[in-house]
Length: 110
Image 1 (tube, one colour):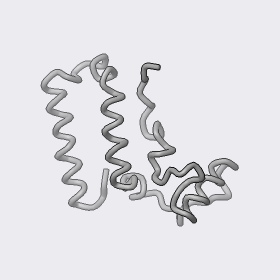
Image 2 (spheres, one colour):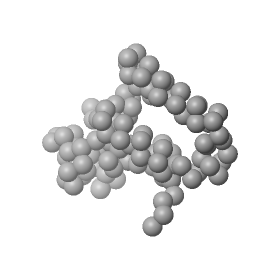
Image 3 (cartoon, one colour):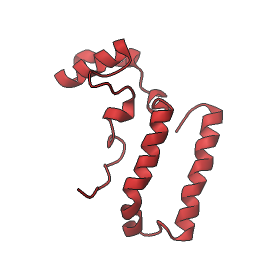
């Protein structure tokens, strides 16, 4: 959830759409919700990319990270992002690498 008042209001308005679908019956059972999870997650990830993962950065900053306490791979990736603004693979925002951190990833058909 964004901390700033304007983005917080926008997010709450968007959440009302989720309530609409719950009331309408589109996602009113665990099975229906699970069937739409990949689509819902894609919308959230798209929003997070468009805001440069503001929801993460509200609490997590590079300055507050202790790279010494991170695993070797994590440290290597995060130090590059902190210095250059993007990971070695070209990704540039938290959600590019950290999908599934706050919520389990949705099941997708392969």
